[in-house]
Image (cartoon, rainbow, N blue to C red; front, top):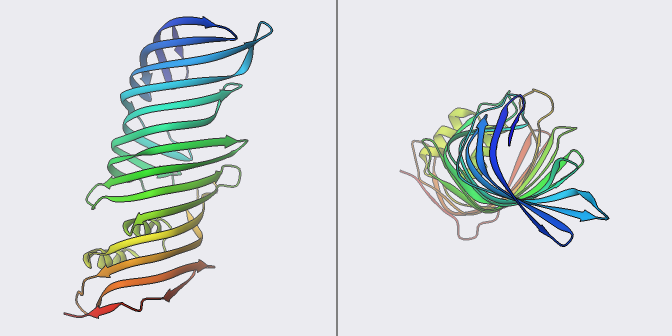
Length: 273
């Protein structure tokens, strides 16, 4: 079967398996368009009283899909994607998904107004749900290798995105300190010169219980509305007139563009070159 739309063509061979109350459609084929590459899929359609129910379960697997950028998407990404996931569709729309994905040699950005982040690789497991215009989900065992930067990892990242108001709320647990630098740059919390200086101080440590709220309304630049989090075991080497620290623990709070830092480090040590 061959289906075409504005951006996408799908060529696939279909096999049907009929079971009590359900039909399984097994396909092997190829996407052509802004998503390009071979895939395997199995969809389960359920029946009741001779009618197909308006929902389906789909298992989609592909080792290498090439994804092109599509302007206008709230979350736009491009690169080589491998995917193994289960999707639940209802009335022609995906409402839930779970699985594992890896994006290589790509770019990732929110909204067209933001500069894209260059990525060598991002991997992790995902669990997504959709309710109306709101997406929520959890990303586990996330590893991000950005171009020209040391990789960073997070045990768990959760998010909630309300597309109608352009509001993104995220939370992170067990994340490398580099995640906070990414948030700071996105929300313009620190200027480029300060971020460059901090990077030269070779920061190490963890960000615990990080919660971030961003406004992504329209095509305006992202605006950081709120930030809460805890720094644990942070170390910075001394450089120029900036002193270094070891075993820094602190709580961060941002409201109304004002950042507050409360230090709680009985074992913290300072150093200076």
